[in-house]
Image (cartoon, rainbow, N blue to C red; front, top):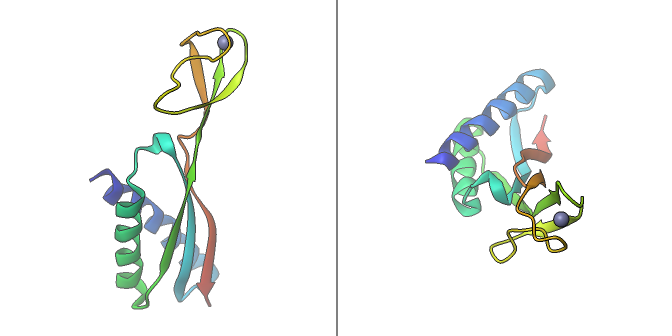
Length: 114
Ligand SMILES: [Zn+2]
C-alpha cells in the first residue's frame, strides 16, 4: 500500500498548486520515480489517476518516468549504475557505496486547466 501513500502525497502537492494557481483540473502529470523509491509504477499511476479524476471530475493522464539508480564508490569515487546484477563497485569491488540518484520521487511536469 506504499503506492497509495505516495499518491496521497502527490495529491497534497496538486491541492496546494490548485489553490495557489487557481487550477480547476489537471490534464496530465509527469512524475520522476527512482528505482529505489520502491514504487510499482503501474499501481501508482492507477491510484493517482483515480484520485485526480475523483477530485476534478475529469480524466487525467499520469506518466511515470523511471530514474535509474546511480551510485558512487566511497573508496575510488567511481560512479556507476546499479541494477540487480551489479551491487558493488565495478572498479575496486567495494560495497561501500552511496546512492547518488534513484531514491527520488518528484513531479516533473503538470499540465493544468485554469
Ligand atoms: Zn571503487
